[in-house]
Length: 116
Image 1 (cartoon, rainbow, N blue to C red):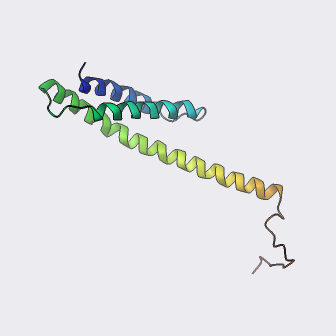
Image 2: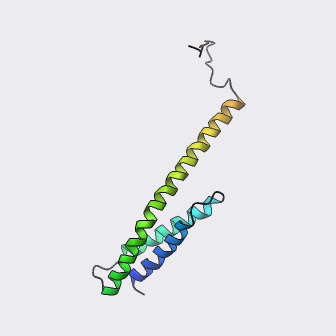
Image 3: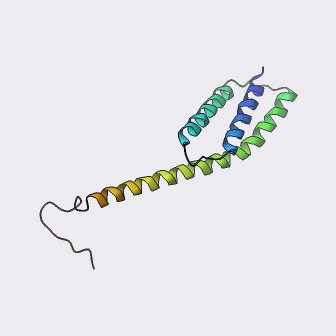
């Protein structure tokens, strides 16, 4: 089987996986599978030949079209994950602050009025 055909199959699997969308729960298996597919695809891309037959070029065009859809979906999912992580960090900080509101006070006994 040619490297381009294998790349096409992996790209189809990646396209199907990304098209399902980022799940609300149990994201770790989704992300692990995504990383696995991306690693497989990169390994095959490193093995691509320098010259292509007509069928390889046709399959390459299909890969490029799928990649045009995959790329924005991956960017959107990455941004959503980043946003969720920052929200979790803020919630964690607020929970710590709520649990011990006097933790951030100065140890030297100074008092700063926060009302201006």
